[in-house]
Image 1: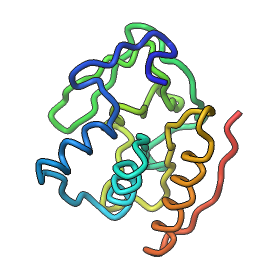
Image 2: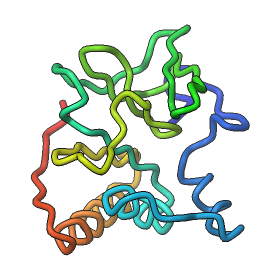
Image 3: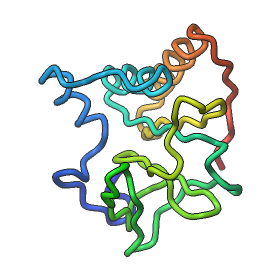
Image 4: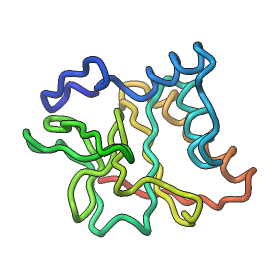
Length: 154
């Protein structure tokens, strides 16, 4: 999936789900907030990366597509950047804001987030895994009091 548009995942550019496995194995996976924690649990157990953005920090229109070569964004509060050129990304009106590796700092959730969009990055070659991850994720977030709705991707 990551190589679809020419992206080469190495080092820090590997899928977030691989980072979670290592962090959990090292006892370093801490709580961030309920929404992110739900993503992390489902991602850790399914092996599928999940992006989560604050919709109030994003601009319309939203789309999923391969980011142009040379595109990057800041992914943490320290100002570190990731080159997302050639990587399948969720983009808003201001450019790429999430992908299977790292979500942008610009649209990250916070304690004041009330409306979110989650993207489970999966392949059409394994629809059962994707469906099960989605079902479990929705069950978890609804159990903690959130409401969910499906959004069609075309």
